[in-house]
Image (cartoon, rainbow, N blue to C red; front, side):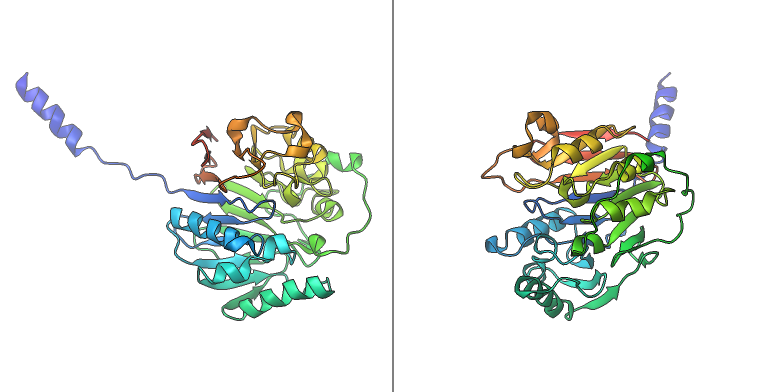
Length: 337
């Protein structure tokens, strides 16, 4: 009997230790109604989408740097600027003062002009010259090691043909009417699809209604996704049901501020999307009422003033499973594939 016990212990000791699953980490950083999304695959090459606002004693740059440290990232390999509005590109100079950026990615020249627009754009150009530059068009790839990052939209254009496995007719198109044309930088946003194994995430920047519909009508060129970052902070100028319901997200994250984004109409579109398991928010949307906010446990920042800039993190596996973690209350929830 004693020999059998010894043998059992030896066999247990010799059992192979399975390596931990290699995870893609996505940090949705609170920049008070702008965007700053840090994407870090197992390779540790980093992709940062936008940088938030300027000013505020480098608040947004400090929050990005803190998230990067948490993720084990010392520099930004690729900084993607979706478009040239202050809440997306304004924080670039302050970020570069704190972290090295290797390659700047954008859609090319700005279409907006005037004192403020020119100041914002030229401040970015001055910093962009310190690194490499990649101007992208629809269909291009951003070469982050360990990820497949496809540019879907840029400079007002979109991919001309469906991605592999996509292209099915979209019945939601018949229910959605076009809106007035948008000549602003929003409509020129760089939108991307991020793939890690079978996991797929969609981030369309601030792309507006008509341009969203061109991607999915009459046929859905994107296919379905696991994770959807609500477009344009969850504003009603975007988040067309034709897009949201076509991509059929399992989980959505809204990068709204206390008084920006999270509009009741867009919130309802996303919340009621067929197959959606959960919606998470960076802020409680004060102006939308309790009925258009998710449960408090799934909101990173719940106070209108004095928030500490808490973030949401998605840890995704190659099989499509993911866990969402709220830094404010350490609440997390796993979504199996």
